[in-house]
Length: 173
Image (cartoon, rainbow, N blue to C red):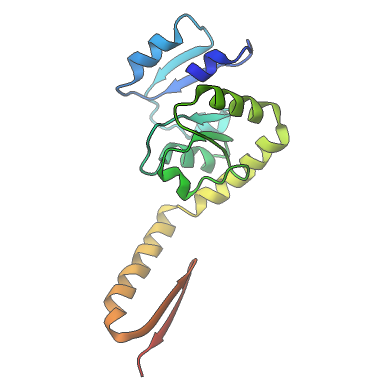
């Protein structure tokens, strides 16, 4: 909200989605800025993500940051803060722009950069679903199954090598 208030662009609209402890504080910060609307909880945000020109996730701390990854899966360009767990998938300049947490001027600059640069926005729209596919439930289940198999079989193996999605197993002689 603070970053949006710094932008002097009457044609921009900010929709704040979700419920949480910060909602009242954010409403106060928005003041009388009619470009900012609070939508509350959205049962299925995927159509919303896909329809937006930009998704901004300004978290201070994230264990993983599922909202940004969901937005990427829907092909939305994303600007997010470097809030910890997002480093698992955030590739600045490739699938998103990443700014320091608690830095509204940097966030505002990143927002405008993506909104004004169609080539960059298109790159993020293309890369997002590819990034998100690496974290699908099916893929997570496959990796979990591999880990269990390797753990169970570990006592019977001489060497186990894992590189990306490939597992190399050499039995004991």
